Amino acid sequence: MRHFLSTQSWSREELQAMIERARAYRSSPMGDALRGKSIALLFFNPSLRTRTSFDLGAYQLGGHAIVLDAKGSTWPVEMTDGVVMDGGPEEHVKEAARVLSSYVDLIAIRCFPKFENWQSEREDPLIEAYAKYATVPVINMETIVHPCQELAMMMAMQDKMGDVAGKNFLLTWVPHPKPLNTAVANSAILMASKMGMNVKVLIPDEAYQLDARYTEGARGFCEAAGASFGYTTDVKAAYEGAQMVYAKSWGALPFYGQWENEGDVRAKGAGFMIDDAKMAMTDNAYVSHCLPMRRNVKIADSVVDSDRFIGLNEAENRLHVQKAMMEALITHPENQKSA
Image (cartoon, rainbow, N blue to C red):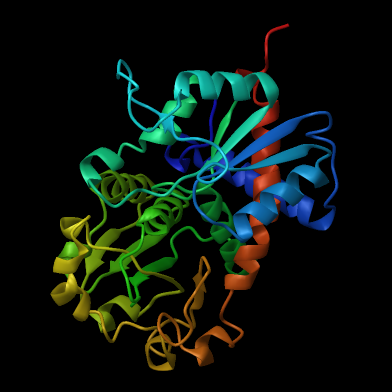
């Protein structure tokens, strides 16, 4: 069964084909790839863009979306094999995934980490369990990575920059009042590196390096493309020559689940907001953010309201790329149900 859990398991050519198909859907929105089919959208966390774009996308492809508030209106699901279920969960994922698979043709899940133990949560246990037991394709609507956002980001970048291979991508940590998930940061470096960009990550302290799975994955993609990858804490060195600046805040993994101890390293990034002075150091770069975004905390108004900000283009692209991705899963040879 071919799932869409992370772009790491999809080739550059496959991902580019989805982006090209998304461009076709942007020009002509309606289709029939999901005619007579349905998708269950399980939201364990809130959403604005993701819920709207998947629900509308299914409709525009002739399908039906069933939106489930999996945190509030369905009961907790157990994921561990062999456990004695005498606690809170009422159902095991083995049954939940198989029952849903008997009803729908796709299952999509949004489930953020609990911010308790990174060593266990880095394994993405809930969505991996659904993928293990489901008999239909499973889609990641954001867990510890956000592959749909990656596609939308790259589509927006290519629309403005053309072929991005060999161009300079800067992922910069930006301030936020609280620690956030690393999902979009993980995804941004995976996609930029897979498409052959030189990737630089600006962080306020070495504690903000991302998990080795994504750092080493991105480094490997860059090396295969003859591009470069690296971290820096030097603002000037990071911005100089950048052609694309991507903003994201995330929590430092050494303090995962103990955020009260992160204050000193977080304070080092107090001046990391993207402003005109920083953008002036770039090679006339574009800038984006996955949204939602705190203005004048992460990015200054003057930058957001300029013609170099492509965050709204990226957000719109979520609709188009997700339709292309759902179509790719439904039609993939590995996902054809036996007669």
